[in-house]
Image 1 (cartoon, one colour):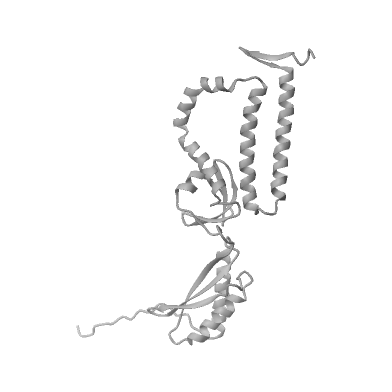
Image 2 (cartoon, helix red, strand yellow; image 1 turned 90 degrees about the vertical axis):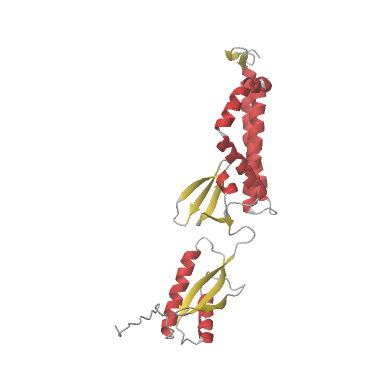
Length: 270
Protein backbone atom coordinates (compact mmCIF):
# COMPACT_ATOMS: atom_id res chain seq x y z
CA UNK A 1 0.00 0.00 0.00
CA UNK A 2 2.92 2.32 0.65
CA UNK A 3 3.87 1.89 -2.97
CA UNK A 4 0.48 3.26 -4.06
CA UNK A 5 0.98 6.40 -1.96
CA UNK A 6 4.55 6.87 -3.20
CA UNK A 7 5.06 10.25 -4.91
CA UNK A 8 6.63 9.64 -8.32
CA UNK A 9 7.31 13.33 -9.00
CA UNK A 10 6.08 16.66 -7.74
CA UNK A 11 5.79 20.07 -9.39
CA UNK A 12 4.52 22.89 -7.15
CA UNK A 13 1.15 21.80 -5.77
CA UNK A 14 0.88 18.92 -8.23
CA UNK A 15 2.08 15.50 -7.11
CA UNK A 16 1.77 12.28 -9.16
CA UNK A 17 1.37 9.32 -6.89
CA UNK A 18 1.58 5.61 -7.62
CA UNK A 19 -2.16 4.97 -7.55
CA UNK A 20 -2.73 7.89 -9.96
CA UNK A 21 -0.34 6.32 -12.47
CA UNK A 22 -1.94 2.87 -12.16
CA UNK A 23 -5.44 4.31 -12.60
CA UNK A 24 -4.25 6.29 -15.63
CA UNK A 25 -2.75 3.19 -17.28
CA UNK A 26 -5.94 1.19 -16.66
CA UNK A 27 -8.04 4.09 -17.97
CA UNK A 28 -5.93 4.39 -21.15
CA UNK A 29 -6.31 0.65 -21.76
CA UNK A 30 -10.09 1.03 -21.28
CA UNK A 31 -10.19 3.90 -23.79
CA UNK A 32 -8.29 1.89 -26.41
CA UNK A 33 -10.65 -1.03 -25.82
CA UNK A 34 -13.65 1.28 -26.23
CA UNK A 35 -12.33 2.65 -29.51
CA UNK A 36 -11.78 -0.87 -30.82
CA UNK A 37 -15.26 -1.96 -29.72
CA UNK A 38 -16.88 1.08 -31.36
CA UNK A 39 -15.15 0.33 -34.66
CA UNK A 40 -16.30 -3.30 -34.61
CA UNK A 41 -19.89 -2.46 -33.68
CA UNK A 42 -20.24 0.19 -36.39
CA UNK A 43 -18.58 -1.86 -39.13
CA UNK A 44 -20.81 -4.84 -38.35
CA UNK A 45 -23.94 -2.76 -38.87
CA UNK A 46 -25.74 -3.60 -42.13
CA UNK A 47 -28.05 -0.58 -41.99
CA UNK A 48 -25.25 1.96 -42.63
CA UNK A 49 -23.25 2.18 -45.86
CA UNK A 50 -19.43 2.19 -45.80
CA UNK A 51 -19.06 5.96 -46.24
CA UNK A 52 -21.44 6.76 -43.37
CA UNK A 53 -19.72 4.18 -41.15
CA UNK A 54 -16.45 6.05 -41.65
CA UNK A 55 -18.05 9.36 -40.62
CA UNK A 56 -19.75 7.86 -37.55
CA UNK A 57 -16.52 6.20 -36.38
CA UNK A 58 -14.50 9.38 -36.87
CA UNK A 59 -16.94 11.49 -34.86
CA UNK A 60 -17.21 8.92 -32.05
CA UNK A 61 -13.42 8.61 -31.90
CA UNK A 62 -12.99 12.37 -31.51
CA UNK A 63 -15.67 12.53 -28.80
CA UNK A 64 -14.14 9.60 -26.89
CA UNK A 65 -10.62 11.05 -27.11
CA UNK A 66 -11.72 14.50 -25.86
CA UNK A 67 -13.71 13.01 -22.96
CA UNK A 68 -10.86 10.63 -22.16
CA UNK A 69 -8.32 13.47 -22.12
CA UNK A 70 -10.40 15.53 -19.70
CA UNK A 71 -11.08 12.48 -17.52
CA UNK A 72 -7.38 11.61 -17.56
CA UNK A 73 -6.55 15.03 -16.14
CA UNK A 74 -9.02 14.42 -13.32
CA UNK A 75 -7.46 11.01 -12.58
CA UNK A 76 -4.04 12.58 -11.99
CA UNK A 77 -5.68 15.27 -9.80
CA UNK A 78 -5.26 18.18 -12.21
CA UNK A 79 -8.00 20.77 -11.68
CA UNK A 80 -9.38 21.49 -15.15
CA UNK A 81 -11.15 24.71 -14.16
CA UNK A 82 -7.96 26.17 -12.69
CA UNK A 83 -6.01 25.06 -15.76
CA UNK A 84 -8.51 26.73 -18.13
CA UNK A 85 -8.66 29.92 -16.07
CA UNK A 86 -4.90 30.19 -15.99
CA UNK A 87 -4.58 29.70 -19.73
CA UNK A 88 -7.59 31.84 -20.77
CA UNK A 89 -5.49 34.75 -21.98
CA UNK A 90 -3.19 32.40 -23.87
CA UNK A 91 -6.15 30.68 -25.52
CA UNK A 92 -7.63 34.01 -26.64
CA UNK A 93 -4.35 35.05 -28.21
CA UNK A 94 -3.91 31.68 -29.88
CA UNK A 95 -7.48 31.88 -31.16
CA UNK A 96 -6.78 35.03 -33.16
CA UNK A 97 -3.61 33.51 -34.62
CA UNK A 98 -5.21 30.18 -35.47
CA UNK A 99 -8.53 31.30 -36.98
CA UNK A 100 -7.94 29.44 -40.24
CA UNK A 101 -7.03 26.28 -38.32
CA UNK A 102 -10.23 26.46 -36.27
CA UNK A 103 -12.19 27.09 -39.46
CA UNK A 104 -10.75 23.88 -40.90
CA UNK A 105 -11.76 21.96 -37.74
CA UNK A 106 -15.33 23.28 -37.83
CA UNK A 107 -15.54 22.52 -41.56
CA UNK A 108 -14.35 18.97 -40.86
CA UNK A 109 -17.16 18.47 -38.34
CA UNK A 110 -19.68 19.84 -40.86
CA UNK A 111 -18.45 17.49 -43.60
CA UNK A 112 -18.67 14.47 -41.31
CA UNK A 113 -22.12 15.38 -39.97
CA UNK A 114 -24.12 16.56 -42.98
CA UNK A 115 -23.01 13.82 -45.39
CA UNK A 116 -22.42 16.12 -48.37
CA UNK A 117 -18.98 14.59 -48.75
CA UNK A 118 -18.10 10.98 -47.97
CA UNK A 119 -15.20 8.59 -48.45
CA UNK A 120 -15.04 7.18 -52.02
CA UNK A 121 -17.11 10.08 -53.43
CA UNK A 122 -15.99 11.47 -56.78
CA UNK A 123 -15.79 15.26 -56.58
CA UNK A 124 -14.90 18.11 -58.93
CA UNK A 125 -12.97 21.07 -57.50
CA UNK A 126 -11.71 23.88 -59.74
CA UNK A 127 -12.34 21.77 -62.87
CA UNK A 128 -10.28 18.86 -61.49
CA UNK A 129 -11.68 15.42 -60.63
CA UNK A 130 -10.71 13.73 -57.37
CA UNK A 131 -11.67 10.67 -55.34
CA UNK A 132 -12.06 11.19 -51.58
CA UNK A 133 -9.69 8.90 -49.69
CA UNK A 134 -9.91 10.16 -46.11
CA UNK A 135 -11.76 12.90 -44.21
CA UNK A 136 -9.98 14.16 -41.11
CA UNK A 137 -10.88 16.93 -38.69
CA UNK A 138 -8.64 19.53 -40.35
CA UNK A 139 -7.93 18.22 -43.84
CA UNK A 140 -9.31 15.86 -46.46
CA UNK A 141 -7.05 13.59 -48.49
CA UNK A 142 -8.03 13.12 -52.13
CA UNK A 143 -6.43 11.38 -55.10
CA UNK A 144 -6.46 12.77 -58.63
CA UNK A 145 -6.74 10.96 -61.94
CA UNK A 146 -2.96 11.20 -62.26
CA UNK A 147 -2.78 9.16 -59.02
CA UNK A 148 -1.34 12.11 -57.11
CA UNK A 149 -2.47 12.58 -53.52
CA UNK A 150 -3.57 16.06 -52.47
CA UNK A 151 -4.26 17.31 -48.93
CA UNK A 152 -7.11 19.83 -49.05
CA UNK A 153 -8.02 22.06 -46.06
CA UNK A 154 -11.63 21.33 -45.10
CA UNK A 155 -12.56 25.01 -45.20
CA UNK A 156 -11.76 25.03 -48.95
CA UNK A 157 -14.35 22.31 -49.49
CA UNK A 158 -17.10 24.05 -47.52
CA UNK A 159 -16.54 27.62 -48.80
CA UNK A 160 -15.84 26.97 -52.48
CA UNK A 161 -18.01 25.45 -55.22
CA UNK A 162 -17.80 21.66 -55.14
CA UNK A 163 -19.45 19.18 -57.52
CA UNK A 164 -20.14 15.77 -55.97
CA UNK A 165 -20.68 13.34 -58.85
CA UNK A 166 -21.72 10.51 -56.52
CA UNK A 167 -23.73 12.33 -53.85
CA UNK A 168 -27.04 10.47 -54.29
CA UNK A 169 -26.10 7.81 -56.83
CA UNK A 170 -23.06 5.96 -58.09
CA UNK A 171 -23.79 6.42 -61.81
CA UNK A 172 -23.73 9.59 -63.90
CA UNK A 173 -24.54 10.51 -67.49
CA UNK A 174 -21.84 11.45 -69.99
CA UNK A 175 -21.73 12.29 -73.67
CA UNK A 176 -19.44 12.05 -76.68
CA UNK A 177 -19.77 14.59 -79.52
CA UNK A 178 -19.10 13.83 -83.18
CA UNK A 179 -19.51 15.59 -86.51
CA UNK A 180 -20.14 13.75 -89.81
CA UNK A 181 -20.42 14.68 -93.46
CA UNK A 182 -23.68 16.20 -94.77
CA UNK A 183 -24.11 13.24 -97.12
CA UNK A 184 -24.42 10.80 -94.19
CA UNK A 185 -27.56 8.73 -93.70
CA UNK A 186 -28.73 10.08 -90.34
CA UNK A 187 -30.68 6.96 -89.26
CA UNK A 188 -27.79 4.59 -90.00
CA UNK A 189 -25.35 6.84 -88.15
CA UNK A 190 -27.54 7.03 -85.04
CA UNK A 191 -27.98 3.24 -84.99
CA UNK A 192 -24.22 2.77 -85.40
CA UNK A 193 -23.34 5.12 -82.54
CA UNK A 194 -25.80 3.35 -80.27
CA UNK A 195 -24.51 -0.13 -81.16
CA UNK A 196 -20.86 0.81 -80.64
CA UNK A 197 -21.55 2.44 -77.28
CA UNK A 198 -23.64 -0.47 -75.96
CA UNK A 199 -20.81 -2.92 -76.72
CA UNK A 200 -18.53 -1.21 -74.22
CA UNK A 201 -18.30 -3.10 -70.91
CA UNK A 202 -18.26 0.04 -68.74
CA UNK A 203 -21.43 1.49 -70.28
CA UNK A 204 -24.64 0.74 -68.38
CA UNK A 205 -27.39 -0.98 -70.35
CA UNK A 206 -30.05 0.67 -68.15
CA UNK A 207 -30.80 3.54 -68.54
CA UNK A 208 -30.23 2.81 -72.21
CA UNK A 209 -27.85 5.14 -74.13
CA UNK A 210 -29.40 7.44 -76.71
CA UNK A 211 -28.24 9.59 -79.64
CA UNK A 212 -29.23 13.20 -80.19
CA UNK A 213 -28.98 15.20 -83.44
CA UNK A 214 -27.57 18.38 -81.95
CA UNK A 215 -27.32 20.86 -84.82
CA UNK A 216 -26.25 21.72 -88.36
CA UNK A 217 -22.62 22.78 -88.18
CA UNK A 218 -20.66 24.85 -90.68
CA UNK A 219 -19.05 21.79 -92.22
CA UNK A 220 -20.67 18.81 -90.44
CA UNK A 221 -23.84 17.37 -88.95
CA UNK A 222 -23.39 17.43 -85.19
CA UNK A 223 -24.45 14.43 -83.06
CA UNK A 224 -23.99 13.39 -79.43
CA UNK A 225 -24.20 9.94 -77.85
CA UNK A 226 -25.36 9.96 -74.21
CA UNK A 227 -24.68 7.07 -71.83
CA UNK A 228 -24.46 6.22 -68.13
CA UNK A 229 -21.47 4.70 -66.36
CA UNK A 230 -20.55 3.67 -62.82
CA UNK A 231 -16.83 4.29 -63.31
CA UNK A 232 -16.95 8.05 -62.89
CA UNK A 233 -13.32 8.35 -61.83
CA UNK A 234 -12.04 6.59 -64.97
CA UNK A 235 -14.61 8.02 -67.39
CA UNK A 236 -12.07 9.86 -69.57
CA UNK A 237 -10.38 6.55 -70.44
CA UNK A 238 -13.80 5.02 -71.17
CA UNK A 239 -14.76 7.90 -73.46
CA UNK A 240 -11.44 7.61 -75.25
CA UNK A 241 -11.99 3.89 -75.84
CA UNK A 242 -15.50 4.52 -77.19
CA UNK A 243 -14.20 7.24 -79.53
CA UNK A 244 -11.65 4.79 -80.95
CA UNK A 245 -14.36 2.17 -81.56
CA UNK A 246 -16.60 4.79 -83.19
CA UNK A 247 -13.78 5.96 -85.45
CA UNK A 248 -12.99 2.45 -86.72
CA UNK A 249 -16.67 1.55 -87.18
CA UNK A 250 -17.45 4.72 -89.14
CA UNK A 251 -14.39 4.11 -91.30
CA UNK A 252 -15.61 0.57 -92.08
CA UNK A 253 -19.05 1.93 -93.08
CA UNK A 254 -17.52 4.75 -95.16
CA UNK A 255 -19.09 7.42 -92.97
CA UNK A 256 -16.92 10.50 -93.31
CA UNK A 257 -15.81 12.74 -90.44
CA UNK A 258 -15.10 15.96 -92.39
CA UNK A 259 -12.38 18.52 -91.94
CA UNK A 260 -13.43 22.13 -91.35
CA UNK A 261 -14.06 23.74 -94.75
CA UNK A 262 -13.39 27.31 -95.75
CA UNK A 263 -14.22 28.91 -99.11
CA UNK A 264 -11.94 31.72 -100.27
CA UNK A 265 -13.06 33.99 -103.13
CA UNK A 266 -10.49 35.89 -105.21
CA UNK A 267 -11.37 39.10 -106.95
CA UNK A 268 -9.71 38.85 -110.39
CA UNK A 269 -11.14 42.12 -111.67
CA UNK A 270 -8.36 44.17 -110.14
